[in-house]
Image 1 (spheres, one colour):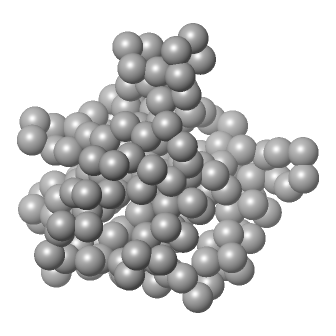
Image 2 (cartoon, rainbow, N blue to C red):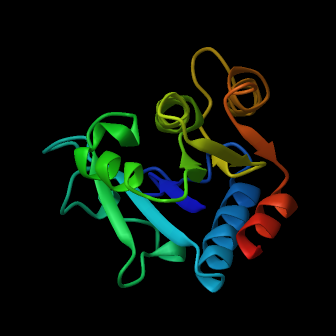
Length: 173
């Protein structure tokens, strides 16, 4: 199993996210558990382009301090929603012996959704721990409704949805 941490960048991690405190606490605990149990952690950052404030070199592009990548951990950059849009990421994960991806991060209805679907289409087992993806309110749905819609409906046949405790146990196995 590999833990994929998507877009946990200073410009996106904000208290306006749905269930912010739970989301952050669980994401940090999963990263810590993976590291403690020698489970590979892969970080992916979204580069929105020069002048956006969310591009390489910008403070908002950086991964949040609570889970700063450690030496030797892989960090990939993408410019579209799906992590598989990064040729380097795609090639790296497709060459892994273990085809189980635990996916956490931001935002549920954008990069998490696209990556979940892309991973599923490529034959990966996708594991989504409860409370480890989030998003903001939008013009159509609250963050809560959006998270519930994707986690409980859209991905129902694509992922193995697990409780947070089950996710920790998987990382410790």
